[in-house]
Amino acid sequence: HAVKEASPLNKAFRIAFGGIICALCIVLMLCTGLFPFATVALPALAGLLMVSLVIEFGVKWAYLAYGVVAVVSFFLTPDKSAMLMFVFFFGIYPIAKASIERIRKRMLEWAMKFLLANAALILLFFLARWFLGLTEVMPDIHIFGKFTFLVFWLAANVVFLVYDLALTRVIGAYIHWFKPKYIDRLRRNRM
Image 1 (cartoon, rainbow, N blue to C red):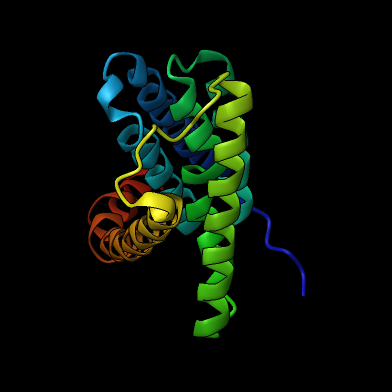
Image 2: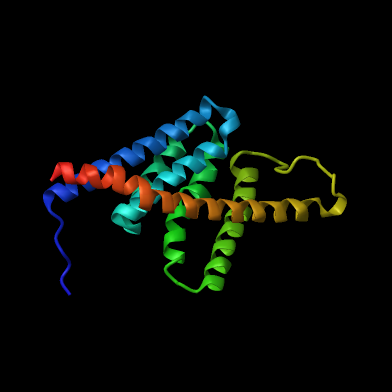
């Protein structure tokens, strides 16, 4: 079937909305220099903003915005570890989650999500060593003896599970509360 042409007003709304989301993400990433204790929280919040683009305009637009924010963050983010977390996990995972959940086979979806999360964890570990010049990423903690690394890896997977479930709730709140109350109203007023 034929692809429906977007009206100029719709294109303008997409560009403006995408620009606002990108700007907000960049501001959050810049704030990592002001709030160093938010090294994980600010990239996670910036990633949450990608959800709105996936819902409103699809994964293509979200990946485009993610690419813009990732490039700008690479050059401007004061906290390079926060930048790495956004670029290699928090910025891309909400978009990938949308694609993965289209499979509609729960076990396969979870397997792919955990595979993606663990690949990102390993990549971040090696990038932190190389890019940030850290010779030892994990502190010299031996609280669990020879099982310390395993315990941290299991804890990271539990945190990921909680993050994914929380992200699902945020997506539901966006679709059922924020979108009808604000975004749809804004669209109606523009037309």
